[in-house]
Amino acid sequence: MSENVRVRFAPSPTGYLHVGGARTALFNWLYARHHGGTFILRIEDTDKQRNTTEAVQVVYDSLRWLGLDWDEGPEIGGDHDPYFQSERDAIYESYFQRLQEGGHLYQDKDGGAWRFRFTREVVEVDDLICGPVAFDFANVEITPDMTIRRPDGSWIFHFVNVVDDIEMRMTHVIRGEDHLPNTPKHLQLYRALGVVPPRFAHIPLILNKDGSKMSKRDQGASINSYIEGGYAPEAVRNYFCLLGWSPKDDTEVLPLDQLIARFDLDAVNRKGAHFDIAKCDWFNGQYIQRMPMERYLELAQPWLAQAGIVAPTEQLEPVLALEKMKVTHFREIPDRISFFFTEDYAYDLAAVEKTLRKPGALERLAQIAGTYSVLETFDAMTLEAKLKELAGSLGVKPAEFIHPTRVAVSGRGVGPSLYHMLEVLGKGRTLARIQQTLTRFAA
Ligand code: GLU
Image (cartoon, rainbow, N blue to C red; front, side, top):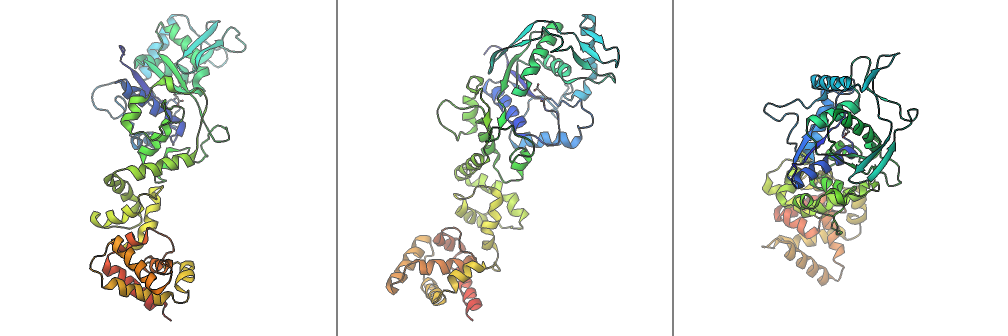
């Protein structure tokens, strides 16, 4: 590619980053990375009431969480133009003057707002995704001249958006399809300013499963809900890629280098993308299963800390490994494994009723403790063989030993594979826990 790709994400901070905005940022970022171009973050904060420092912080945090680093924009060092629209007033003034000198502007008689005079013709948008789309601007009743500046001097989105895209030398504008009807207006501004417009690519909206537009309240709408919901950023990012784009084969789980290598605008669909939180959860589980132990521990760590589970890595790792193939969200982990880290674990009443209160259960617990107490090797394979051998010699099903043992050492009726769990607990703690259970439920 001869031209150097320059794309941007231009959010208006609202206090949360919507999944649609995040996906727009992601597609721009992927496009830049795929073509070795530049990805710019620009904060469109002309609406003064809504734009707070916290709202901007949410944008940074969400993008960083998704791993979408920007090459130009706020907080990047060096001398450069400001990337907040609120700081670019002088630039807008100069473009405003150019339009005025060119005779493209006039002031409303009543309120004093400034309008841009449209050329009355059919404007064709040649969109990279939607194809050619014609908009008829011939009728002034249907498309009245647009306001670009309010009576109080503040700027209207269309004008500053175009000025910034010119000033920042954008080669492509990749944004949500809701902006497609704005594009002919923008093209009119480019023409009046004598600037060749960038290429436009409008990506399909994200819809709920029932086809309705995704709103703020819908589950999974806010990036914060993923951060707080125990998702792995790489899984969410991968899922978001597939909202409107698909690799040409059926592969779904794609590592980042593959996503960058394969992403391009020609494979973005025209139809709306259906959002499915269950699918996102599936990706999360898949990523957890496949991720290196180190990353799994790293992502689990904040959740463990929050639950007050603190232990050295050598102790955490084998315990967490037991659940790696089963976990869907990191937030589930503390509850799944808490019993490993206290001898004062709670006994689930239903599990106690169902297994420990069963006639003969406590005798069998004592028997398995006897069998296990003489073992020198305390690994899952040996533990399984010995339990089955004991059950066989007494003519009962292994389950009659498995269930009470599980409840005895964990207090629960469900959990990781029993033998692996016992191996991780170790001989001393296993036997102590069985003993403690026998004492407690003997009466
Ligand atoms: N601030 C606009 C938005 O958030 C940007 C639109 C664009 O990307 O051109 O929708």
